Length: 514
Image 1 (cartoon, rainbow, N blue to C red):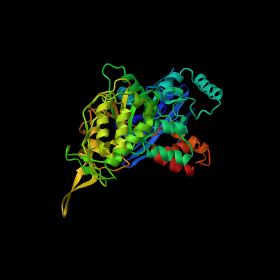
Image 2: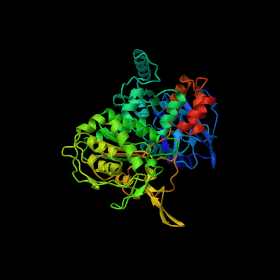
Image 3: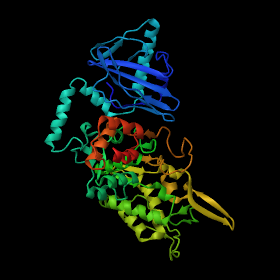
Image 4: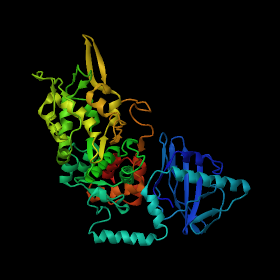
């Protein structure tokens, strides 16, 4: 049974098979649990035109809509169907086919042996699409509901009433206590939680959501829960996967997903080094070349990083001891005179990571060296799980906005890898901590190679835009927060889903017009 499933672009090939006998119109008919659904779509080079629902003979047909997006790699199935079988049969638009149902399966009458062969190919392709489908808890939920759909709905309503809340909000008190029933619901972030879990700050997308809705709630998405579950399994796995690069189209929620992962990990007792604005490491502030290392120091960014990290893990950092005993060398701070006396600093014996950070905050000339040392120290921590979470990660693989003076009329652009802090943290495979980063396509950084240096192969984790269920939940939430004047209808949900292609930011903007 399929509900809110996202398929890859191989659906294009599926619809081009000879079994769909027309170049521009195609119809697939499926019947399950006494419901017969028909989809009809006009495919052109510019995309897809959705056809209307049809009524044929004694049976009622409801259109199943698919969006074939040009220049996109995914095809979204937004149909909210109570049930649908796993085996598909198809027929031409002009052919008059009779369809019968046996249990939950579907069997279409075939005109001849050749068409029967093509039907088998169609089923095989449908199975391939199922295997390629992205992880979505809706699949497992629909499998459970297929036998007792009414009982599951009644149980969900009873839980919502018992908690004294509407079904739109989760009753979980922490992200670490989420269950399947909490998917596509909203979790409210309290003001004290923002200070506890996000001492470094919130990503821009989440801040805009909170400001627009005048609330601190965010949508619980299946992809975020799945990523948390994978990291939890990898803690005890013999061959864990520790490196992830969150990638996806603009507005898919990569930064928000990473922020929620940070909150989940910190609520579990993890030590998380979170950088919500990676581009700030390569833009703004002052910079000076460290003649000893040959790299460029950015002391203003170093101070900001140390302050945010200390706010989020003040108590835990005081319990973790330093392992590296080598001295910290002082650098140059633009606008400040060179430090007098010894040009290095040695921490007292049995110093904690909190002592190390406080030294960097007290002495600006050593702040960059402390941040670089933290990369080494955190890789040696074994008492608690450690996670590096870096947003706007792609800005560390192109040129910064800084330049080196080469003469009266010549300046050389400085690459991000020449910055001391970026050079220390952008290599994902160094050390044993977990490392999750996110690309940001809203901040243009130019073209990058497919395989980034220091990034493991197959590290990318695809983040997709809203599906139809998430779109429906978001619109209901915006109406509740008075961002939309009218309650959303099914037609409104479909319209905005197609218009925005699941882009969360655009969905919030267009909800005002609903």
